Length: 533
Image 1 (cartoon, one colour):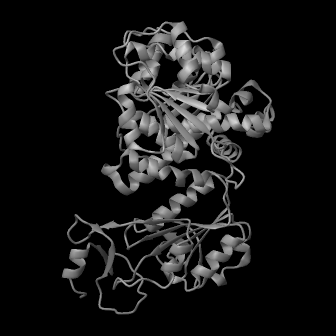
Image 2: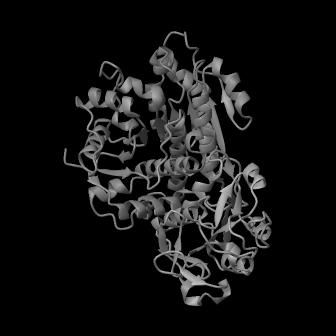
Image 3: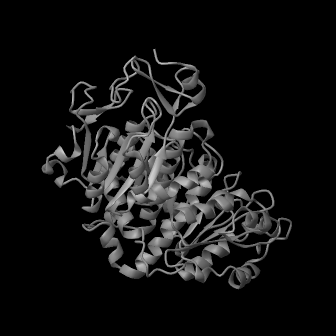
């Protein structure tokens, strides 16, 4: 087959933004339970109860209304105990049961799984390799195809497609794969390449091309399914088009369960694609790619491909957010809690103070502000950054906002926010305010900007060098949709978290601008034990 078309960065960003606006349902008082998606998670055996729980919670945290876990009897009670939010049905065969024949499996799915009530289903998280469970993969796909129900196959549900011997026990019919997403990790991808392509794995290179071509060939071998090859960078591909998803600040933590989060998140976007297709019909593809003309364009506009892209990028963003706060302590529960905030960055919800970032000096407040701003730039939003003219750090004094690790970006400097010329803010959809504690009018101006339809993010010190709160802190926290509290590492003991800024010079003025020559971030013990010199 011809080489796949690899999406450029600009086209990928544009597609992600359109997909988010079209697929993510708007919150509405007229919505009812289930109108924002009902997702099924098929998996969970005696040995693996956490995986289906993570997948189902990911579905709920991403925005689905209901998540049903269909698991083995031995897994049902633990999963129910994990969360009262989940509907749990322990109706899979027990691990030691004989594999059901196709007819019995079909009856089992018909009678108990209630697939017709779902908008998408993910199979494989914690499924295990009991023959009785693996025998259900094919019948599930057949039933889903008859219902036009999108499916994610993950984990052990991929084993029938490519086992350890490089053989496929299950051959997929073309009718079942149009709305199928498979999400292999490195080991699973190697098995699939051996079984379906008779090829060794093409490793990721610095230049996109060969690795993407192989993922597209695998998608074609799966009768035009969508493949998400998980790795340091994810590759999402169908038979005609591929995209590589990296991250400017990736998570370097590989904790168990992240693949289950991905499966659940993709399932939600597939569910939303199902709902969007009911609303837009054949116009959905035209909305995803208005100028589609070629076969490649049509592949890009495929809602299954677009949903897989969104699920992958949301999961990567959520992991990145957590990793750059918790580092080695990053785990799946923390990633799950970060999903709602990540979803909000992709969907317009204007007219609010989106976030206030609080912390002492050297905690990375400006870095976090810039990270959020860059994400909005990637989403094609116009951005304005405002900083205090009192801060003259950097190569262009008064004209850049600069982090303590010397990263500088253009910014407009002013002594008061009310003094910022109207033309600076007129076209901005997103306004980032750095060092908010220096602006005595930060609360009224931020509120006015939000009420005019702009998204506002403020980074500010939470207290002065004597640990007293700034006057603006309380009102900003009360008005913000989200508050992020950062800490630094104590610069005295080099061990504990540092929530306080200690002044090192003998100046009692409230506002003294400086860096490490004037201040240190300290933990409570070190702050209390040292006096200002």
